Image 1 (cartoon, rainbow, N blue to C red):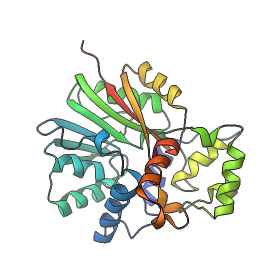
Image 2 (image 1 turned 45 degrees about the horizontal axis):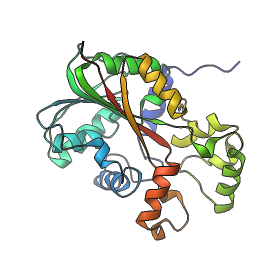
Image 3 (image 1 turned 60 degrees about the horizontal axis):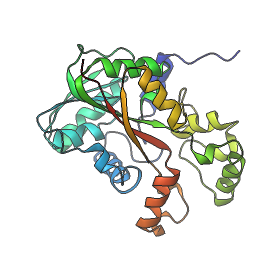
Length: 276
């Protein structure tokens, strides 16, 4: 019987392999933070800036859950928000602090578990979790914790791995064959050759050794968020990292936008905590 991963397994993996460490410079170097920003701005989150609304929460209290090396934290702090951030690993906390110092912004950053946040009830005007809660063993508990610390009428922005058309039962085999034909490989994992099924394919997005990486349909994730108490105001599809494609530099913006909208690997939810 397969042993279910524990939160300690997740912490150990991400302590060894911070975000994007499989593909860019040594974590903590100036080059690392520069290339992290470049990957976000020109690729994976290129079309999601209106969703994040980094300048729209000036003077508000924002919580970044699973901050990693602090890209989202830095953006909201630069926009004038009062930002608190947590991450499961001490290494990510150190990286996020370095990142803030490099950009000349302030944030309160500490170690913390998304399944048991170290904050009082109803503290934050906005709670964000950028591609992180699908990595915790009890995702539903993390949804409930994010809800708990958001004030009545406050907002949530939670992004999650999705099962889209490319993962469909009758299309997934074709997806794998096309990836092998084009020589597409994620850093840290040869998804098209080594994945046993759709769920294993999604888990490997962040490396072969990643213990937890859950994907669901947009509808299923929305139902889980509602069960935690959230009002699901809407959602967007994003996160099509073109840099993994052959001749990515030649892809025009309009084509990248279409791929992002139609084949994005993540769903970006607009959430509201209802007034009491």
